[in-house]
Image (cartoon, rainbow, N blue to C red; front, side, top):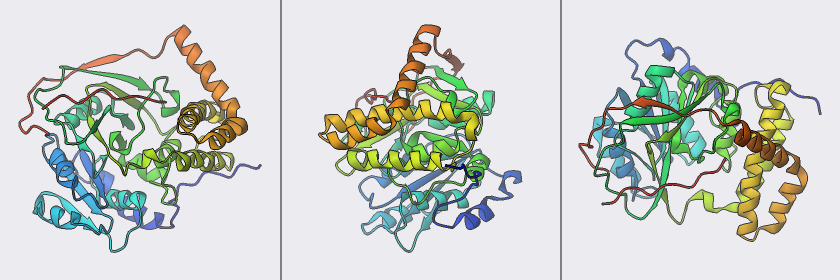
Length: 350
């Protein structure tokens, strides 16, 4: 199949509006360092905690909250924050990707910090990201998340004084696992604009799709410690829907074969290695949850990518992975605790 030239765009056709709003903002003198973009849909039970976790962040920031036409009391909760947030409400439900794109079009910060309305930032999150930006000026920062059930944990102590992270020339160079979730993603706004934003026709594997667009965009840092995001597990988490996520991989593979992602043939093998890790994880989850046919179909059609990923991991184990670096971070107890126990460590996948 002939590869088409990559052209950034948004799937729903509103790329022109997004770019028109984003274009030219990079030179604004008064821009904050961070724009925390929160997408909310029927998160009445959780959205206050998400916004409050954003408000307690200390470095230069603005908070943009987009309510995606919620049918519960989310909008009323958000209105109670007044001028402390930039509140945008969509007239009709358009989906999480569209809500995030809308928030990004309003944002003025140099970096976009995405946060789902049912998750929360740790009190020191932007201090960690800001310290990394100060030293390395990356295009992408992939934060460290910790999963929890039930009530938001109370954080009774500050982080360890050191930030442990690994740096790569691009995302596709990474040789360590990372938990994929929107709330752990930080991206330079200019790079987000150039990539075309979130694809609004993709829900399952949406962050994987965006990272494919940003795969060769520039320097990428993965935070190993401290935890920067609290990821809430509940009955409506999309990640519990195994079959749609497996189907989402087929959608991404089709886009890659059509040349819809940047980098072309030069990064074909690196992209295949990355896909291999993704395929292995979701095939394993499919088998574990009883979706045998879907899992076997995925392995049968693109199992060669899994083999490449295993070879890459074996090579990294033999030769050694990229070294862990440490930056100092002044320890401090949070002024406003998040929620009476430390958040548990989270599982990871590639």
